[in-house]
Length: 107
Image (cartoon, rainbow, N blue to C red; front, side):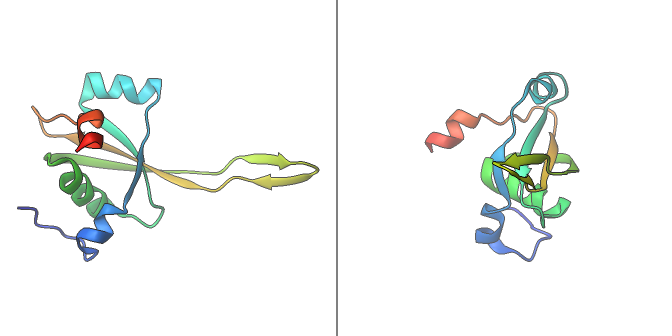
């Protein structure tokens, strides 16, 4: 069914998506542009992300945009520190396709 460009295999693709990233901005993107945001592994590429979304949610992906988010400076007691950098992917689905997070979680 899915012709993956990735060499990760099914098990590797299952680990690409870390979590859905839902904020006010991404909620508006879901409604207006049929675009969903995910927190993904830092070493994931656009073809990996596309194949992972198509595998996990059984939808057709039209486009993937990736953003590297830098970590923030924080204090841990007296010691200054830094949170980890992370990667966010905006996935635009083909017209007529949707992702229902609740239905996919129960299955």
